[in-house]
Length: 313
Ligand code: UDP
Ligand code: MG
Image (cartoon, rainbow, N blue to C red; front, side):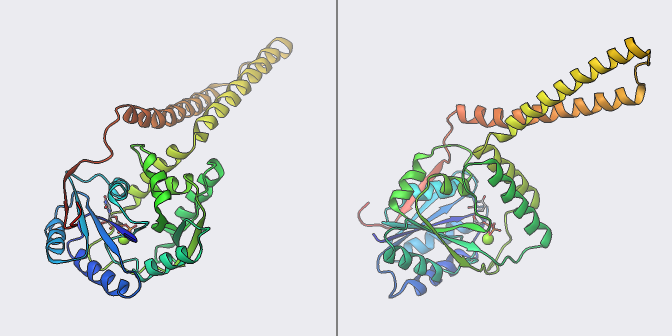
């Protein structure tokens, strides 16, 4: 098998069939052997029925991993990779925002450049609000400052890589999966291919602004412990500063008889220090909660069933 196409699907009833058809049309004459691996991530609509219909009516190898509930796109990617048999694996969204013709270009690039193991599509033009673009840029700036892992602004999950990279990704069995970080952490030579995302064919994006913020915090916690060090640093600095201030106050009182500064100073200091302590506790809590969940060794996903029309399975 040359190529495995991994497609996470969450409430994509109107998209899966057009995607399937568009992929077949595009691959005709370009890629001779490929399989579809659809992951139904706990959809509440007719996605699973439509996928089953595809599977029953085609000769092209299709596999469907049907989750017991919604586990998130990162878990869906992990499940899809686990089932992928291809020499090359491509991740693509179900909503047709990513033109399958790029997959052909990516596969060709890997064939022509054996020194590369991965081709990642990155968006240099984004059809998003200015505020959202600004927030994303700040996030990448921040996480790149803090983490040793490199995060490329605009690099998407739309990528194509060799089986050796897939195996490395599967070795990373962490529960909180921040795929962008995992792809970059495993290394391998990556070529960044510019692309422009299309509009969603049907349905709406599953990413609200707050969901993105939460995802950003998860990414930072998963790939750097710098916030913990910052809270230690700020704590040490404040403690030292207050010690010096205490000495100054005592000397002033003994030498010059100046009274201890009044109410406002004390209230400000209490509020400031209280706030800093709560912030530091919160940062610690973020890491602790992730460690707690990981220590339970829960599965990354639960598949209710795996269907396939492949003859050799
Ligand atoms: N997706 C998923 N599980 C989720 C959320 C999304 O499998 O919990 C899938 C979704 O069906 C789509 C892809 O991940 O194929 C990208 O999602 P979406 O289009 O909502 O993200 P965006 O393109 O807005 O970043
Ligand atoms: Mg999308």
